[in-house]
Image (cartoon, rainbow, N blue to C red; front, side):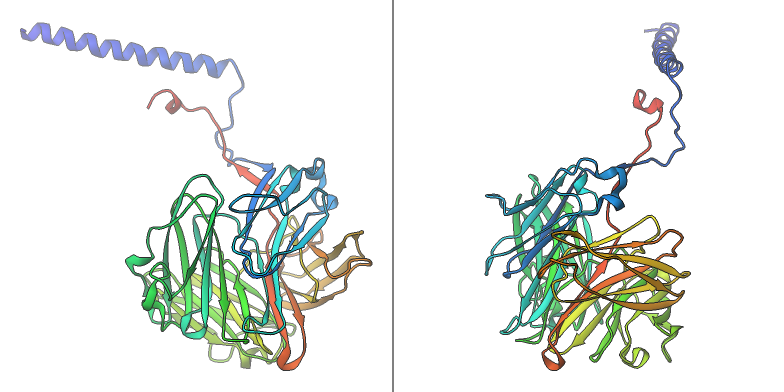
Length: 488
């Protein structure tokens, strides 16, 4: 083939390709002219949640409760309630269902149980639905009052609390509610730094199944490497699929049980609310997941205002480490929250002791004037602890029983203060009722925690539950014109 012929052939090929591109561009342009242009700069739109799934870990003769949001709080979102069904995760006969907007449901689980329970909600009842599991053992090796919000499946999950050196047993419950198999990596940070072994990686969780991993007692639970950890930040990452995770702690024979709350992702500004008042040890736990040390400003917010703990106003926290801070002298038995501002992303929570029991809390996102929180189980003595870290706040707490809403209680929280509100059950509620917690119009952001307690002195049992904004909407990504859809 001579040079002239080669040049003509290549030119023909490039010309053909150019004509194809011009034709596609013309087709795209005609489509664009035939309808109004899409707004490609929009961040997306909010749509009402119409399906939800959560997993209650089961396994200990507990009570499961559901509470729907009220029509008043949902507005137009509550027109078609749909249904929320509770079923064993491995399948079988449904345990029960909730079909009423603003209604509640509860059931005592068998003792002992060997499976988790999956809550699946469809319709607008899914918007703002709360599911919880609460256990009360007044005696025996598992003596304690323990509560946990039923977990939504995810792919990157954190817990912050005691390690095997400070607890008799720590059990990680992993549930897979999907038809696809899941695999997870379990890693941890302690007071001595990262605790990472190959044994905690690639743990399989079969479809529609629950796996219980004893931390420090099995290879999947990081084995001997975590045995000496007094405090632990545990990370669960799904490398395939997704899992719902819950973490159960038993401190010692008859000395308290609790489920650790799920921690939010690491951040540089955190509020840890709901540290209960009264006697007993109180500690703040701070974890730095990154590779650089963190400088953290610490403030305690009580009913008397905000102040830095003496000698602890600035904390230098080592990287990849959990650092405890004793709060007993700073709190002197008062209910409180802690504000942390860091130059590195951190995790934070608290550990509290009272009588014969323990409780754990975590940082929470705020409830704003556009949010509300839902709590489904309040059968014991109930208080709600409220903190307003940025401006005064006003909150309405409404108890909800089988006969409908009770008398609302409006609570005012001055700026930089923590206030405790005692809650009375509505008429006819019996031994169970829900709570709706909503900031009033014009209110500043507020952080809330529900505490249940029973017994006195050395027989006191208690549990805390962080209140998070109810999930009522989902952000849908923006859709716009793109030539990339036609031209790779």
